[in-house]
Amino acid sequence: MSLTKSLLLALLAVVALAGVSAERARYDNYRLYKTNAENAEQLAVLKQLESSSDSILFLDGVHIVGADVKMVVAPHKVPDLLEILGKAEIKYLLQSSDVQKTMDEIDEKVAMKGRAGEAYNWEQYYELDDTYAWLQTLAIENPGVVTLIEGGKTYQGRSILGVKITKSGKEKPGIFLEAGIHAREWIAPAAATYIINQLLTSEVEAVKQLAENYTWYVLPHANPDGYVYTHTTDRMWRKTRTPYQGCFGADPNRNWAFHWNEVGASSNPCSDTYAGPSAFSEIETLSLSNYLASLKGKIQLYISLHAYSQYLLYPYGHTGDLPDNVADFRKVYDVSIAAVNKRYGTTYTGGNIYDAIYPAAGASVDWAYGTQDVRMAFCYELRPSSNSIITGFKLPAAQIVPASEELLDSIVAMAAEVNNLGYFN
Image (cartoon, rainbow, N blue to C red; front, top):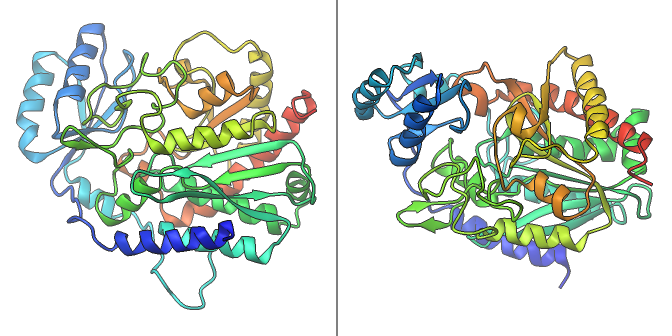
C-alpha cells in the first residue's frame, strides 16, 4: 500500500475519533495580569505559583528577574493571588477583566469543514484534517515534486504529516521547517502551509530560486493531538495530550534529548512547561527525532516556527554560552531581521535563546544543532509583538498573509546568507 493511501486510511479513522470531545473550555471572567519579579525573592514566589496552582495559566515562563510574566487567573483564585503578590510586594497590571470576551473579539475565522468547492487559502485557519487533505492533494497533483512524508506519530495515533519538495527534480541541500509544536500557536502552521504553496506556485524569482536550489522538508503540525484539542476543547492548549498524574501533556519543545530539563522547564505534570518524565517521553518528539536522524547529513538549515513576540532566535537555550559559529549566526540574523522589516515595517529582535528571551532547555532547534550537525538552526516567534495581550496566540485571520509574506522574505534572505557563508556546500 502506498504511503499516501495508508495515511489517508489512518487519517479517516482519526477524524472519526475526533468527533467525540469534551466540553469546550471557556475563560469567562478570568483575569489577565502582567507582572514581573524585581529580585530573586519575588522570582521564587512566582515560580512557586507557577508550579503549584492549577487555577493560573502562565502565558510566559517564570525564569529571570525583570522579565514580564502574563497570567490568566480563574475568578475564584484572584483574591488569593493578589494577597500573595501584595505580601511579596510584586507589582502587577490588570490587562483584561474578562479573558473570554477579549478572545472573542479576535476574528480568527476558522474554515467550515467540508465546504464544497472552496480552495485551500490563507484568509482563514483550518482544522488538522483539512490541512492534511490539502497536503495529500499536493502530492497527487505534483508527482515527482511533492512527496508526502510522515515525520512521526502522536499519542492518539495521528500522523505527523508533511511534504518533501524537490522542485528541481533532484536532491539538493536540505532545509527542514517544523511548525505547530505548541498547539495554540495557530499562525505557525498557517505560515508553514503558505510557504509550501509559494514554493510550488510563486513566480517571484527569488522564491523560485529558493524552491529550486534546495530540497525542502515541511511539517506544518508537529503536535497534531494538541492542535485538534485547541479546536475541539481548549483554544489555549499548548502541550501534547499524553496523560500524566491527573493532568495531560508535556511541552514538546522542552522534551528533546539535549540538556533536557536543565533549566527553563518544569517537573510538574500540570505545568505548561512540563518537560515530561524523561527526554523523548513523548512519542511526537521521539518519532520526529528518529525521522530527522534518518536525514542526518542532508539538512543544512533547520527552521522552527512559533508565536508570538516577533523574535528570531538561535542556540542555545540551556546556557548563555554561545555556539562556536556565533559570528555566522549573527550575520544570518542581521540580514534576516532586516528582510522581515522591508515589506510592512515589522520589527523583529532576538539573538541566542537564553539571553534574548529566557532559558529554555530541550528545544528542537538546540537538538538539531547540538546532535545532528545542522550548523544553522533558527526559531522564529511570529506576529504579533510581545506587547499584545491575550491576542498573542489568537492572531486575526486577516494577518495570516502579511505575517507569512514577511516571513518568506526573511527566509529568502536567510537562505541566501547561509549559502554565502558556505553552509550549503
